Length: 611
Ligand code: ZN
Image (cartoon, rainbow, N blue to C red; front, side):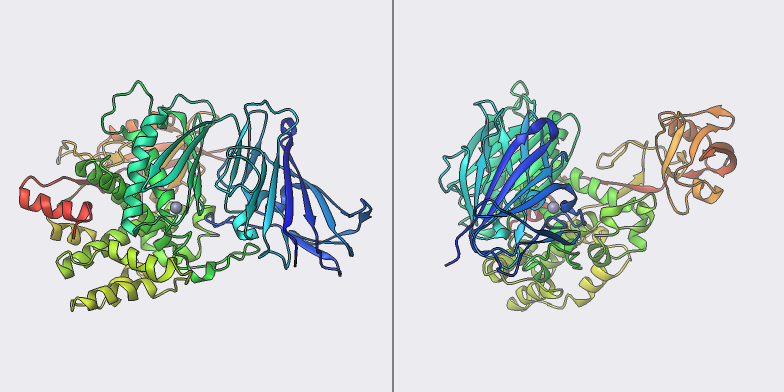
């Protein structure tokens, strides 16, 4: 009988941002034990080479006698041979304040297992025990927050936790510090929210609102929830945004101003808080969609190398579709506010020229090298599997409802995927979602072939049929030009049809040396046609000085079609361009709730998930 692997972690030198770790292997490979570090973390599809943060590593036998350590490749070591127990001691540098790695200073310690725990080759399926030691300098107020089950530790306490396997060990991030915490119940399951960082959030309101979101999600997939307890781990900072899903928790990074204050009226959430609730809803939905309903190639994860799948549109896109819908179904956001969010999503999609070059299946497949490694040309060349994926989900939902008079919707497809795949651990293959949707239509005797829908939506680059499908529900998709570079869509504004706004066709950012840095130059736009490139710093238009704040406004004062001289630096060389200004593209979407009761009901049947 193999003994559990024992990991000890201590946030011992916070000022130097170093975790000290010890790993005890009772039954090592007698020929020399191979250890390895993940090169990526599930949910974030980029090679991160976590081994680079291991700053020292040594091996010893049970008597403390040092043993040889041989590096095999960038993320593997062979230690020993040892006949008895093998003790590995290593140190990990942790100074990445994101949801994906590890961070340690005098105020708190946070780690994802993938960034700190070595795997023991051949023993990944053994039970893993984790002992979390209090740092020597920690104040007595420090606690431990994790969804990892306690073994000897008291709840919120330092001590021993356990995991059934390495895969489980690294799927429960750990936060250590003096954080705020509050508990709420959703469908009888305890949920904790833990907030680190300076903030003045109204914890009662968060509990009240999140419990409704969580209940809406649990009810969609049916009770019981697939976890016994769930933890929202939130890091509040000045500016920041991010989330990563786990099987019984999520790590979130947000701006403290996104959190609700006790002094705020308890009306419907403002835009920033609504965004935070949407982030919570998104990661929580992943507890089913991607943590349990998974691409087959993720079972098990191969954390040593890229794992390509054309299905991220389903796992991120469908999740993005439901994150805002759940806020409506939880009663936190009105249907009108939901349509505003959807119109903003459509606007983001329409502003991505990459949608005509890359299919959403290809974007999923190439996430590792394209979506996650976006450069200045990304808006022209990459389509987001989050945004287009969410619109594919919308179109599929509306198509199914249209064909079956609302008797089949995407909700049932997700439920079937949960019942037939997620619950049993069966992986999802490329054609399975189409097959599930077709099966549900066929059960009702409805037209079941979705071949042309899926092949065009997933593998094509023609526009998705959302305008026609929304029309079929009684909703007009109104498109207009953006009012300004800050216009993200969703809101109707009075426009003068006779006066189009002139634009450069570039995204402008402040440049460190003054001037307007062209962060992206859109293919076919005025700047691109005149020969300007991303990275150029525009310093004057028509002989007058501009910067990032004034450039767009300045240009918009000229008539469309006029040619202006633009001075710009490319590196340190001054260049002059003759730019013929183009009209702002009609890429800004507005959706308005219909007035007549019958149409309103049809729209709300869809939004509220009524069948
Ligand atoms: Zn996601």
